[in-house]
Image 1 (cartoon, helix red, strand yellow):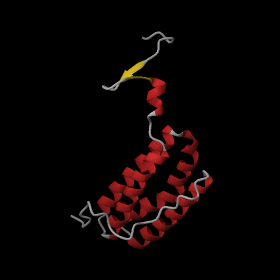
Image 2: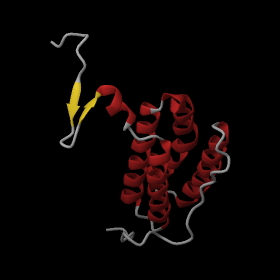
Image 3: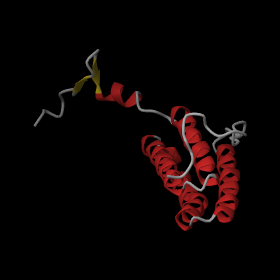
Image 4: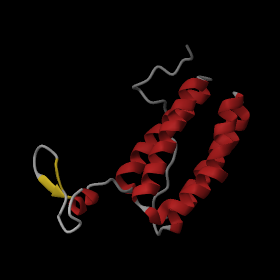
Length: 143
C-alpha cells in the first residue's frame, strides 16, 4: 500500500498525470450532452421506423451518458435522477410496449423537460430540437 503522503501518478503513455490532473480531464456536460443529443436523435427515428431494439439501445446509451455526467459532475446528480425517473421513464416504457403513440407523447414531454432543466442551470439559451431528417449513418429499418 502506498504511503498516503505519496502522490499517485498515472502514466497515460504520453505524460504522467497526478490524480488531480487526471480528474480535470473527465468530461463535463458540454462534452457529453452533444453525444446524448445524437443518441436521442437516433432514438426518435428508430422508434418512428418501429425498430424497437434499436430505439431501446439508443435510449440505454443516452442514459449511460447522462449517468456518467451526473457522476463526474455531482451538481447535476439530483436533477438528472429526477429527469431519468420522471421524464425519461415513460419513453422507456413506450419502447418496451412498442407503442408509437405513447412514445411520441412521452418523447415530446421529455424534450420539453430537458430544455427546462437547461434553464435551471442558467443555460436556458440551450434548446435542443429534433433534426428534421433521420441520421444518415444508420439503417433504421427493423430486422
